[in-house]
Length: 376
Image (cartoon, rainbow, N blue to C red; front, side, top):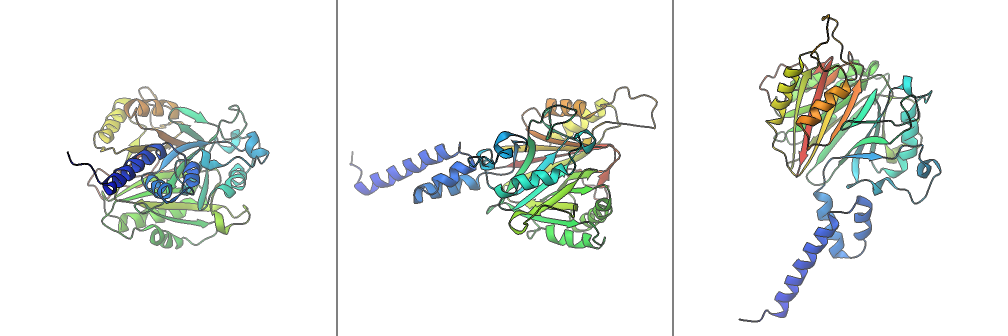
């Protein structure tokens, strides 16, 4: 057998080293990847490859009452909890204000505490309730007990993932809806768009209804998914590098779109006032149409309590967020979920992206909007 040349041995050793580095880096958080990329060119290339593999993620970060944040611990960094550097970080702050023990504008306090850790867009959405799978997440001390964290959706931006963001403050004209659509419309019309929209129940909702009308005109059915809703509590979106202080005015509406060849998403809306059996059938309908990739996140937005004033009995209905999430997790047992809930008669935004029906309503009362994001 012919002995390998020195050049061949060098190439073989280089590939072996590359494989070893890839295997190691897949377990690193983003702060570790940033540090190892400074070691040498090989480590830098490995870190770049690993970062490019990482997509949207669900992470529970520390609440602002923990000692590290409250005391300004210099060793603390949110990147110790994240797998990728987020271009957009959406923090879901719950429970609602009436249970916050007079913690007014908690969303602003959280943005002030976390602004220095994020390089781009940071959004705080005040919700009636947030859940990680079936666990209720409390962002502050209150009637429901001690805080246990802040639930976040973190969206990286790199070569394959394009994220477009739009928002507007209070007292803007309703004609601003057209600008929002322009800002989030994809450059590549051949790729499916994943749309996320939140608004306040006051001026934001009137803007949101116009944005939804433009979505139906601009986006082709089955080429977009939609998730989001209307909330009474405070909403604030900032671009961290350009904002010096977190203060009024509040944000009326926030919208974003995600496109990418390695990203797939599906969405569906389910009326919560129908029988349990019918809800289950619609959940199986969504599950049976999924083609999951390596990493997946589920998103749910619905009513905290289900009411149907047209019925004398609520028998055989899912009555609240906990019952809804229990059945969702039973059917989608392997998918990690971020779930947020509001007062049921506020609208939830969503579309059945599997259906051919292009005339669907996009704002729904007493319904749960579901989205599944999956990424290679």
